[in-house]
Length: 331
Picture 1 (cartoon, one colour):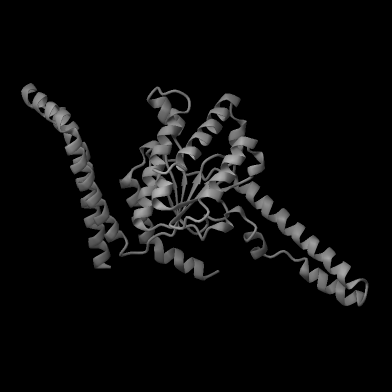
Picture 2 (tube, one colour):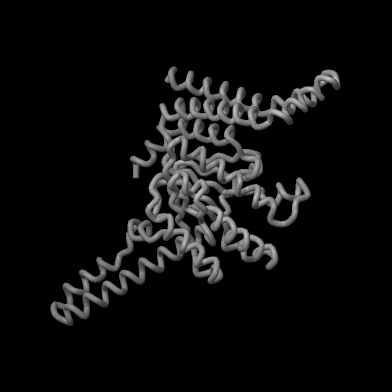
């Protein structure tokens, strides 16, 4: 316990250093020193920006690896889900055009995926588009669909994070609701990345938990009905009483029948669910899967989410790990 607590202290200290180092040039340039010093520093940064940027990236990368090494001494989450909330508010706050907040959110997602990969997280699920989002203004929905097409193409490029890290893309939800061109792009992305096995990115689009549960129940009922009809055709009408009793038992739908027909059956149990922008609502996302996981809701909007928030969520999970494990074993 003492070692774990010391490790957490080291991580917090490293985060403070990272944040200070990231903001140092801005702090110096906006300080109360003389104008000559500010001019000198600004010119130095302009002429040596590439060198400084290289040193900074290496230094922050080194500190991040140190933090993740300490974090990996404790339980590492296997599956993290994100409700990417706050893209529109981010755009409004900065007077950006429609869709630009979601572009900034995509950049934030790439950073978060990198952190997950470095820490050893195997499954990441994101709430990309709710079925309820179709109720928004048609032009906004179209912008989001166009952006999705653009970003899918981006993810499949040779230099993309998906290619570099061997990430498998897995789209889940009621895909029949997507337009033909978007659905074709989704299916193509899943086919191209099917053999990647370093990390699985599950993209919920279009998705709601109620639709997922309804789908699982309908599939379970249909499978039971198909099985019953097949048995009747095979056995005919012989031994009617025993057959009826057996059929009644076989028609029972168990929890396992529902679970294996869920969209999320492709992923293991959820460990952490993070919703940005300070909201504590689940908004019809993973309602069935989130009953025994760590919930974390930082105040930052999704495009503002950074390393500090990610590490803090993992630390919170590690502190609660024994409790959740005990609950899971009681099932």
